Length: 318
Length: 318
Image 1 (cartoon, rainbow over the protein chains, first blue to last red):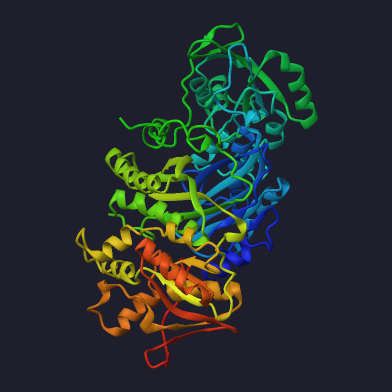
Image 2: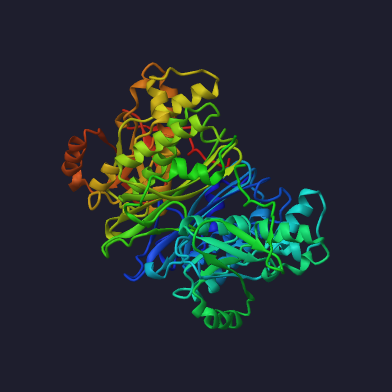
């Protein structure tokens, strides 16, 4: 006999008395306790659809992780500290094993970031996950997209391109081993929350890389009304791409999405501070270019010559 | 040529500088200004899927209205004042006329309640709408589900059953005229926000009727650990059901969902205050039963005899 909706909620999503929330799962609304006067609430929402944002055969634990990770990544890109989230989920049927694994993946990540599930909605339908996440940040420390200034350095965390490689492989019907580096990057992105917090008052602008380096950098340039140049040899390409021809490496690393690394701009006088942050977090931070006055984006090769890149940000509507 | 996602966001969802929000549509997160120390944030999220929560041929303006209305209704049921919302939406294609009408319906309701769109997500896919809404309420005034006490009166606003009548008609393939009363109730539910605010410190428990009177009352009883009896003759049945046989009227009014009226419990000494609220808001408020100690729910007919009702709350998963 299938579980009813409300029993389902209770069994999987209600983890007992709310910690940070005054009232959690199970009423008309969740009630979130006020934050102190120095902070504002940072809010982000992401809608994930089967066939578009994840494959039908995705491991439920990976989907649970990723659904929350992409939202935590938005908080990270704002320099916000995670606090709570709501989950709206549609499932074609109540599969308890699937749901248990989904929750395991989601709550493992939530617990690591002290981020509490405070409410949601469940319904029957094509697999759909919509998480809205809440964090806190002092408004003057928020890493907005519009803060980049000419002469800022451009930095990126981690390595790029592995997730896009996995997307390509799976789109071509190839199955990747469970321990495949590219697959792990696609299914288990690590939101750079600690980095975002460390970059408060250090970076001037930041964005997380969901749509690809060039496309996401384009958002910073547009919002900040500036230009930029990127040094292609400085871009930290994932070792998973080492065997590919140069053009493919470039395309995947510069235009492939789903990496969920942070791209940020910072004044040159902060270089040492940023390098220290990378060492403290054991996270490579690469200086890949600079912000310029004007408009436009140039990618330069090892000899300083402009590269022509066939690349646009991944646009969910085109 | 199709519009890109980001152009789409700008054109339809970015209505200029944020009012209440510090930072609105177009960054990694929205930043919501703090609320004063007397209030907490009330949060609700609803996921609406085509074919399950709305018909494929729904008028886009009606869907825009209803997607926000069901969320505002949750705030109303908590006694919270609307403040802001996020919208995550999937559409199979970028249809500008459809989107313009959707926005018209949504923003007309949002503006009436001074509730600002502060962020969201857009993607291509089966029509899906996930709104998360934010309101504010002093925690001691919040109308929770667990506050009902024995001897409380049970009240309901408006009239019941018309929306369920429209669902039945459309499920049977019958088209309803644009001015059909039942269709208007289904497509244009009016969130009882003003009533919710007026019931602060007057009602002890409240819920909005999305799943049907008996099912939603069941949530109050369960959370408050009490029983109840309902007087069927006192239930305000919609005039749209007047021509139906008694059994059908009963089934639609007691178990039909989608009315989005408020059901609430209040101490008997508040009867005059509640009647005055109804008059001030020009909204019928009917006293339909009472809370009892114990457990269970009895519906009584005009002679006080228990009625057997074949009715359960609409469960999105069974």
